[in-house]
Image 1 (tube, rainbow, N blue to C red):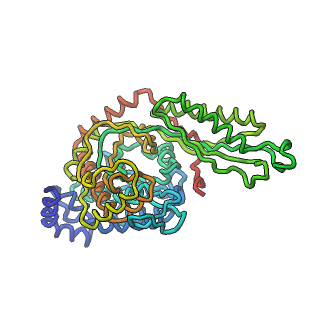
Image 2 (cartoon, rainbow, N blue to C red; image 1 turned 45 degrees about the vertical axis):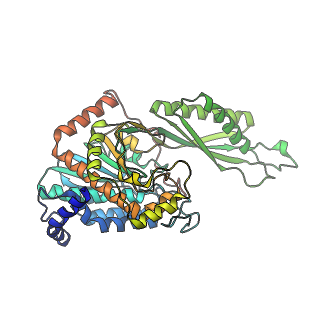
Image 3 (cartoon, one colour; image 1 turned 180 degrees about the horizontal axis):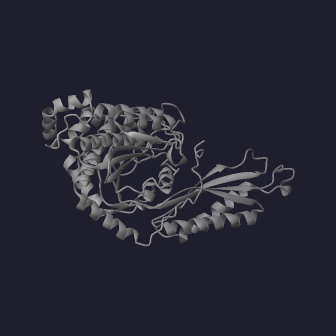
Length: 483
């Protein structure tokens, strides 16, 4: 029913929309105009933007074309864009409007390695072993830019005070791009930050996440012939394996919500050569920043012990670190209300056929296809994953939500997520997200008391004595971590 009403309202403002597209973006935008209709008017541009980011599929800190495409889009819609912020070539801040309050909207765009996939319901890489948008960040960036354009048009046309910023945040996938922007003070004068994320469901509940810290542990030994003179060598791979054995024994003695993962990134070159170098890459996760630090120190101690026991030398580099998300129920409740009013995602016949075929490749218990039309209950959720949004949330009141851009039952970081995100199922969820972001921002601009309550909750949850210290320390952005 809401969709039909929106269409009728859209027809009633079609002349105004035509004026927008023909001239100034604010022209003809009356205070009572339907903001959702403005988002609808931007849909073709949004889909084209998302499609380009999908096709580029660039890895963290290497997103030159993706970042430029987003920044150019925003400049074309009247934003002043500062590129290369926080010593990151692909990071940017786009600004429009004047005065306070200042609302920031996050925009991600990096892809994941090895998950290239065409938008079809069976495994079909576009380019084998190439990156793919398996977390839907092409949709994330496009929806954020679209919502920002609509709300900035509304601010200008209604003479409401306020500034809208879009933060182009690269390398969310293991690169902690937002942490470097936070550390550089780019959120210091922001009142509220909004974000969203692709998913297989519609949810705007208050939530937290695990904090996360990662490091590369390199062991250095002595090469020798593995058959002729093994006693003259010291295996760096033995150091890696001894470390992994000890950290696996740690699992029994870690807090239940903790997580520990690793991959061996270098195990030597040939079986008949005692490896003189080897490397293992570790992630540790915990719901509290202090817990993350404690677990990481235990992993370092295991690495030191492994080096001592194998006669090798160990060195490590902290790669990234993310705070857990600091929940904000005031903002979450506001977003939840707008998500419910906007409704879910309804598949047409072709989309239903696509989803039915794709579900044959999914494992585990599957939710119904109709679940995309509903909004999940409003209840606190503790997520086991991590995000660099966490650091932003400890410095400014922050909240986000998810919409159904993937077929129900689809896990993130899968080829199935890439497939649905590259066609109309993903685009529908993206446009729903853009509307919710825009409506939420407008509500905050119009209600100073609401914003004050969100800030009060933020101060209470963070604590008055909190001093921000990034988990990744003072290291420079690892611009080559995906090379």
